[in-house]
Image 1 (cartoon, rainbow, N blue to C red):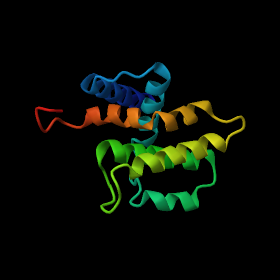
Image 2 (image 1 turned 90 degrees about the vertical axis):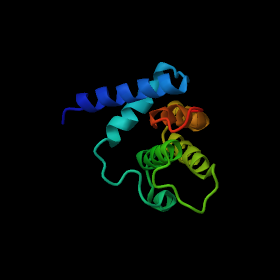
Image 3 (image 1 turned 120 degrees about the vertical axis):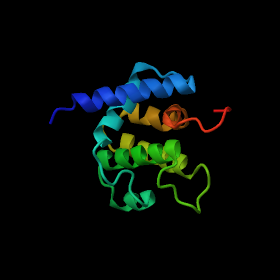
Image 4 (image 1 turned 135 degrees about the vertical axis):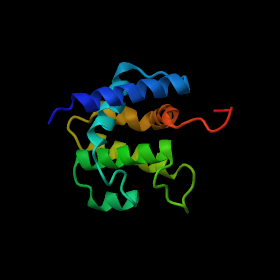
Length: 137
């Protein structure tokens, strides 16, 4: 499979998000967002309907990383958001998923641990992809 078109499109989206949000990431975090989006470009069920149920099925670092990615997308773009959860639900769930993903590797994956800490920032950057609906955005 040729990943180049997905990576290019994802890179353009991340650059636009940074520009709109006026929040600029370092290369490591930018690269993570680009590759996360490219990995999930063709996923039909992304994010899953009920993200928290995915925790019971997760076994590997990749499983937990995918949950974190799902939470990041829901938190940033309000897609498939559960109605009866607090505003910070997906942020907390995503942070936990990335910590589990980082801890499931030996040695611990420092990038995934950092993503857990920077979850809120990454979400605010990705919100830049949403169209402005008011003058205050």
